[in-house]
Length: 325
Image 1: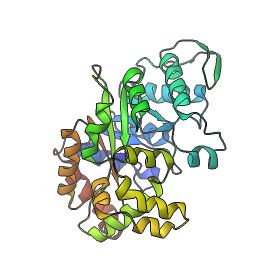
Image 2: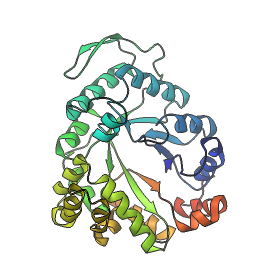
Image 3: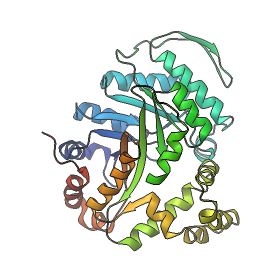
């Protein structure tokens, strides 16, 4: 499950994490956009739930210096030894430039260089290296983790997918349908033992299809007009389906862009229906080769009306495999 859940203060997540554990969820993965940072929700989970695995999906490679990113990852790996995975990625110009006042330049090279730096630094090595996009002089972690965390790479198109296969411990996929998974995985080639495929999957567990599709269209128009995601979906073959959305967005018509997203695209990228139906759709990702399907829970009318009680009833139904002892 993607955490934290919207509408619940971080301080009130202890019972939520406990409920997820009881329901059969094995992992908690955080994101980092404009809500919480990636590490704080997981640090709380490390203390509250000693058997849940933790991961970032993702921490941007531009918004922290390499040393600070290594320190943050090492601290969480020390707090949750053997059960933390660090997911990194390029992110987007809006998040990097507009919100964090950093330059978004050479994203492939920067991601590759940060990945190489982290692999060395998290093993306790002294890094004294001139990379293509930055230079690090004699950096050594004072508290290298006893169990260095695996480093996974967010990837969309062939270049980054191949980089993940060659140098990372896994890949993180996002904003793709279950039927798209084989196309992405084909670029990885033969995977090394232990290499993981993680995918974030948007889930809106309501039978109010109009609500789910309205929300889905808004999200798709906001995300898939970002250049990297637009190129990703062109590569996946959605040029004709999403062309009207891109044209409206480019013309400044945000409302028209959302309205132009076809139902078939919404239904493929934002799973909706009963919780059991959503779980069945998530299993399709696993059937196509995803090792760690990570649900991203979207707001529903039932959750808005029912509050904490509705969430408590929903979590076991999304667990899919039943409760854990």
